[in-house]
Picture 1 (cartoon, one colour):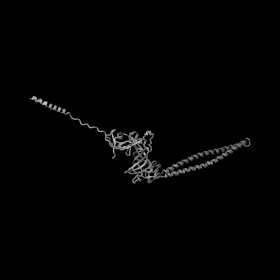
Picture 2: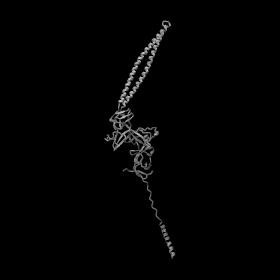
Picture 3: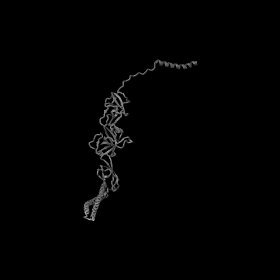
Picture 4: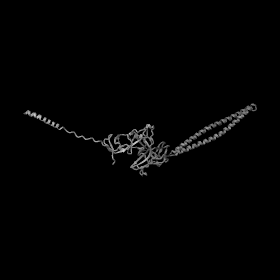
Length: 448
């Protein structure tokens, strides 16, 4: 009996499990889910914009600071006490060319001029006296020559008479002595003439030296008055009245305001655009082309413009820290400006608070006008994705391009037509697309 219970306890679970498996097999298992038919791909509606060919030039914008065209430091060219100092010599004063600024005590130099003038006149008088002696010497030489001729004829006549024993030997010797005396007198007069001529040359040189020294003294006298050599603003005043200054002592520094310069820097890609796509090596020179430029200074919502030109490269090459090329923009008329309102329209007249001129230290914006030598294509700035991709719709199909921008400005991005892959008339996608892929179907969205 116990054995039967044991067998039933083991056999009953096996029977129940087998019955369950048999029932499951009889039912045939779960049915597979019904399959749905695949849908045809649909085109995504997008808004597009046209790829346009860029006409005209481009503008390169850079920051700059106004610097003076030049600063002239006036130094004392003669030593002395500062006798007078003009009010125009004070810092910040605007002066015209020729305006008297300082005067150094001129009395010592006036005395030098007077002394050298007298020496010059004395040399002239000495030359006049010597000319009289030369004239008298010329008369003496003429008389001595006549005396020599007479003595020679007399000696020759007595020579003939002595041969005929008409005169004595002593008379003939006397005639010879008179001839020698006359010849000696002539020789002495001619020697004196040579001495007087040399003395006259020395006096002429002394007079020329006195004249040179006199001119130098007059020049030193004129240098006691210091005047402004240019139109400009006094930026540094270094001496006071009654101070003693030595030769070479700096007195005043004047900033030339006839023109101004703006110091700016260009990136190398901007430099290449300035050169029209040529490198500096191909250009073969360190000079930059003279391009028209505008200098813009903003006060509040107003902008003020000056006309200028890119004039030169500053220094020998790139700045080691910024890797940019320092350049100078020259503004020939710092006081000639235009006022623009907040919308960029020219105002008919300057407002009362407008600057009267470019001033050193102004932080300005430089706009260079460049004429590109290659064909450019333009798209709206919103058409370029943050990744740099440009989505183009061609025949209803999406094409993804990644062209290299040539220039960005005025809400547009410019590309080189030859290497961008874009074609004038293409439609670029302005709408946002999730996971864009080449070959996606697109359709032009209806404008609201």
